[in-house]
Length: 298
Image 1 (spheres, rainbow, N blue to C red):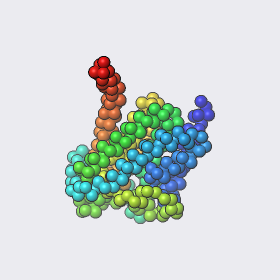
Image 2: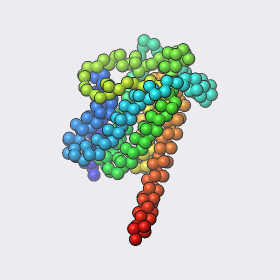
Image 3: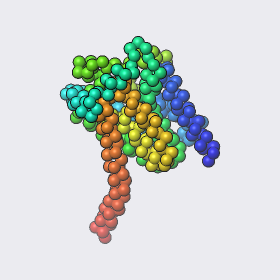
Image 4: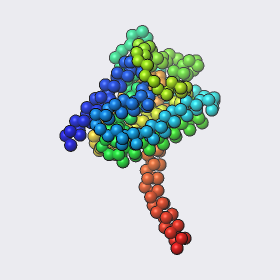
């Protein structure tokens, strides 16, 4: 038991260190690269075959979602700008992104919290996948429940991106609809030129700049928080700083409005309710169907 806990502790440190290294090397943190990193880690644990059997289908479906997401803005070019601006204005009396950047962002003088915000931003894929890996080490059933919820949540978001393409604050600024919003992420990334060319299939995907509603940057951390509390009890509350850090960062960096975060939480709760309902009622439905078929055969 002690060895197991120590192994997980070292693996978490490995994940954080490799994430920081990938940012420093200028590498985009994509699922395929990240699972490669996890695979290298699993070699030290010795469960490679089970890992590939469980993770390859999950990874294939997740990357398929990202491919479809890259096409979503080509299916509907009616981008929504003002609805999100008005929503945040109505909720707070100001636009939180504009307010935060006026208070904290200094053009030409990057601060420590700018870099920390970008680090939190890049945990979007990194930490949920690492969390899934820890679940997989502890209990493969936990991992499968997590994977199903993550995929359902992702595809629900994709269909919304097709129906309701939505602009982030930085793009609204470039369209002249918001004042004084800097895409801080681009400013930071210029300081980290790509030092290593590690292949990724994501080079073939077009970025979708209008996939803001719901915010999966908000939804994924919230899903991790809820499931960690469900599986690990009060220990799951340790993820609260991660969740709040990501939420603050995506607003401050100009990547999302607060309404995007709220809708991300709503989508997460809806996903958990739907998958929970199906998980509870599907076995009973299948059993009743089997009994009905058996009666017909007799």
